[in-house]
Image 1 (cartoon, rainbow, N blue to C red):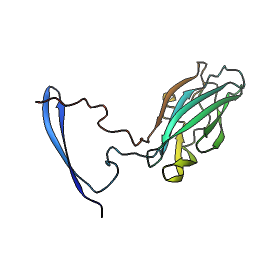
Image 2 (tube, helix red, strand yellow):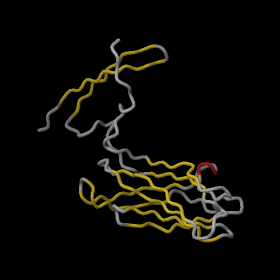
Image 3 (cartoon, rainbow, N blue to C red):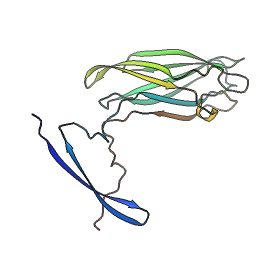
Length: 188
């Protein structure tokens, strides 16, 4: 039977110039991680980049990022953007992971004369099988969103250099802690 342990955590909250002392009393029932600070698997990825409309054919850019499984183990994904046609601008996206030994795609991205995507489907489903996680083989489903409400949140093809406008995933590693950025407490 798992041993219950009581954890009392005291912290100081700063509200403007006023300090307020608070305590959090929690019962931990043998879980490895705190429910607020533990790992979280990546389920959604959002990417917004500008792919240069004037680049020569076969131009290629890569966007690396980390994603996490339910145990908080990190895996490297690489998004590769390849310029395959000029008029209209067409790019292909492939997504790969060395840990999964897999490549997804190519996903065809076509743009109009103004640099906006001509197709704005919803999030794209992704699935990788990681081979070296702490729990053996792990099958993980995620979605990739390339379109937002505004061009600033979408993949575009303007006559500007390649740029990453935003890149986000909702997972969290096991070593990340809510208190990492909190300075040590000083006596009152």
